[in-house]
Image (cartoon, rainbow over all chains, first blue to last red):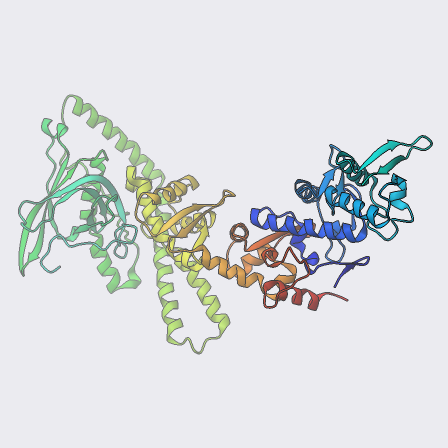
Length: 179
Length: 443
């Protein structure tokens, strides 16, 4: 079976029509469904948070059968993810797309879990520490996209689980947990 | 005839009379009654279409009725045509033509007078003069001679004789007043017509030769047919194929009596439509039930030879099929391509053939293009593309657009599990597709 890095590709990745946006509705819906699943799987495995439509994205072309997705097709598949709540456009021109293989709510739960596991219920951390600190090593939070992390933290702040405050010395924001 | 007069006429499925060999239609009028008081069994023949041919007068009931009935009076049975009386009265009532026929009734020869009442707007004078012409031309006797001695078929075609004009002025009475002016005008027309005819004499000669050619072609076809059937076992495939090809050519040469604007007048499109419906059946069968309008246009005009029709006439004729009961129909695809298909034709059959085509190992891996499909299905590429697009819209196929071109593949999407992208069920098309691609992939 074909691989992309260490990502195992499904058989249908070599099916040429998979790379042409299908005009017939039923066929197109199924095609979009398969692309959504594959994009989410791939991004989850490769820890990819942002897909740039105008940049080379390994999943969007297949050198074995010499096919690649048109811009229209890329936008169609990512838009489908956006309307599912599994992605968000980062700009109005739809050039960059934030991929949420975990929804923001799920990311918030992961943070809470992380706080409890590390007994950080009443401590203070910086946002950068959550992304790259010793505690987060080996967890899903390691290397998390900053935009996603901030969105999850803000959600928790609204629920009163923590407070975000501007640090005095650095640009970085501080987090005061109160779980 | 079983004592019945006039005898019934066999009609084609589209409601046109089956013509005798060498019989040619000359004039058609609508809303015509046939009346005869002297024969008690004479049927009620009201407001039908009357077709004058070189051999017969054919009366067909009006076409909107699906159960057409038709009778014919052979010109050979006519003893006498009565000159039409011109008078004040005749200007206000429907024109009538009376003629006397003789026929055997229960073994005894009888005669009776039949009246043609022309209620329609058609040019009845032309009809009457053609009637005279044809009756005097005695084309049916020519036929008998030709049959006896086919080598001397020096084409004394009924259209070339009979225009001798000995009788053209018979039965007309010079009149004063409005009728006289009309008469004068008519004469002027006839004179110009005569000079035109002289000018076109060469053309007529060419056309009468064309008829000979058609007869020759028909004869050759018969010979070919009989020779292939007699020793078909001995000939090799090549010979058979070339013979079949020649037969096809010959077959497409001959519409002996094309419907023309001249002969059919106002009924032109309707009659053309019926003739076309009869004609398309053979090419339709060969093409598998569907054929493009352009192909038919070429075939039909080739078969007509000299009396070509315009593309618009063809389209009009096809559009009229909706109104008359014929076994063929015009179909317009979403793309605008128009085709003729037989009513018994089913898309399912074509879909089944396409399915077989795209599930072959090669097609599984590389798909099919419109020209591939055209070759396999034996149809024109434009039609093949329409079929493929139809199959796509029904979910059988899906497309692949790449720099290499536009190709169609069997639709695997429904068989792929979106819950588990790696799952492949056995005995699915998806599984055989994987097998075909892995087997052929260069390593």
